[in-house]
View 1 (tube, rainbow, N blue to C red):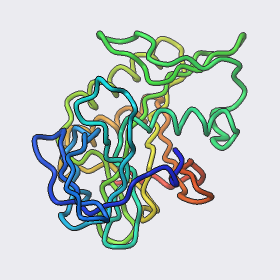
View 2 (cartoon, one colour):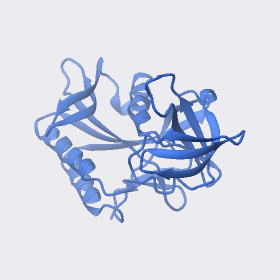
View 3 (cartoon, one colour):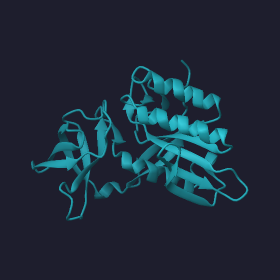
View 4 (cartoon, one colour):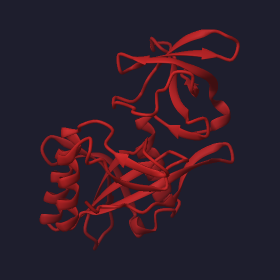
Length: 235
């Protein structure tokens, strides 16, 4: 995502999950689409600097979409969950995620599990298929600690169970946390928000699911994944 193409403003409010009112630099008040269905805990404080993208699609009711927010007046964060898969795919293709190299094919949204679609499927002749679930981690706690999820997620727990099933079938499975937040330096499951998700994530690791976390950099006029972060699974 190119940062220079974004429109800056100040968040007035986020409401009805999918909408946000934003005051632009010239004082104009606009309503933007909010491409994040989560609680956005700590990411939707009124008065925060935000950045919007504009769509030229004439069929869209709200041509502006909320992309970034500045947390605590200093950390930029991408709240558009639709960007996570693209950031991860780009990082794999550019060799940034060293743990996911050596494949000649990347497929997206392939059906698997119980009426689910895997975010990314890596394939190479002679190697086990690698199933990758991508989650957008944006909840900053104390210090540089980030956690997932920011609300109870039955869907996220279901995905972990499906990854375990893929391992049982002889495939490789990876839970990858995309962390598009400058202030987060380490990741953990948010047990205080969804204890079942945390329990299931630890069980998944015991059964062979790999867990990775990579943080985005906001520089050179773009956003891209760069740094691997430690994941704390202690209880």
